[in-house]
Length: 204
Ligand SMILES: Cc1cc2nc3c(=O)[nH]c(=O)nc-3n(C[C@H](O)[C@H](O)[C@H](O)COP(=O)(O)O)c2cc1C
Image (cartoon, rainbow, N blue to C red; front, side):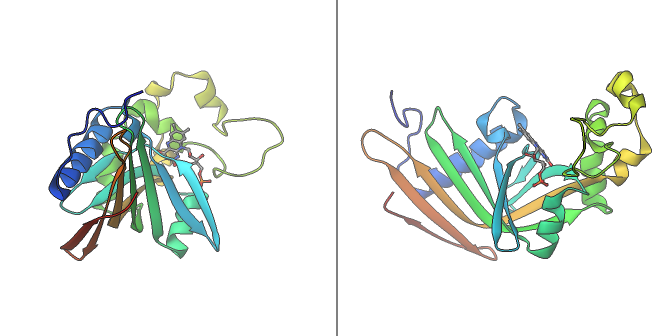
């Protein structure tokens, strides 16, 4: 096992460049481990974590976007407390990123529209459950109406789906980067106050 073999990191700028590049790859490549981060929210005083798909990343805004059902519990959690963290791990590079910041929910604005346009028809069925995600049911069920269960999903563009769609934009102001290496682990922390960045190496 060779830890951190593919990363040649000497400076904090290298860390930033590598982090941004890896996040962009995570958006583009559905097989990339950064495509499926863990999103943490607060439910009152209890942390809640779940896997999401990384849909977009903007380094100028330090914003990460994922999609969800607007009725899902994570949406009301974010509306009550916008503090979130995202966790990424790349098992071949042995690289971990922890990003913290605040999230906003978009259901009815340009951001939501732009994201919805990018949802393939075949995926729109994900927003068609008749009752909200997390509702208890007597039997195991997707919650989809019978019509959808029996037809090829890609033939369906149901108007209800748009109503249930939300984009979550997570704007981070703290980044903790960790690279495991046989020659000594490396760790760096970045903080942004508006656009003023402070960065430091820290003990892993
Ligand atoms: C590989 C994978 C990808 C997922 N992607 C998403 C996603 O992009 N958006 C989403 O809302 N849920 C996604 N889920 C489901 C969530 O992990 C979670 O179960 C669901 O959203 C309910 O979360 P909540 O009750 O905290 O709102 C994904 C699950 C897996 C296993």
